[in-house]
Image (tube, rainbow, N blue to C red; front, side):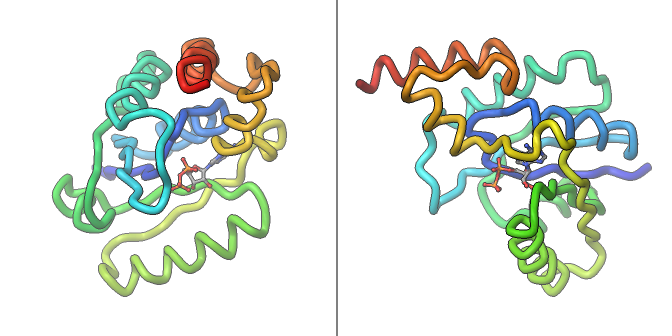
Length: 161
Ligand code: ADP
């Protein structure tokens, strides 16, 4: 049984993330989406809000679960017996970044392999940070995020005005 972990900030979940989750859930027996408490990025949504969006978006996927992860991803992976770390690649910038992280993780634990999936062409330009900027100016995000996330972004930005 192969357990995979898809770690990220997911602040918030996008259809690009969801596409990757769906594809990875077909490849592995179990997929854990690990919501990180990233120290260098200040979140718009709390970890539990981010988890709730992902749980709602993955209800139909029986082998996907969601957890919050606070420490090193490799430590979290060992604690849940996961051996595959899933990440997404949208462009060459992602590649450079992921190559560095994969190398570091490999030096921390050489039993863990990183598997990178290419972003779907229609979501190649979708990032949580860009979406937050578009949302701030009232742009339409309905094609790019689940409806609950679009509503959540509108509410949050209205509150923080
Ligand atoms: P992090 O802050 O850890 O990069 P993100 O939530 O931004 O977390 O992204 C998590 C993972 O999802 C990363 O591997 C990223 O490359 C991937 N990802 C982000 N957006 C997309 C997308 N539109 N299509 C495919 N993968 C994506």
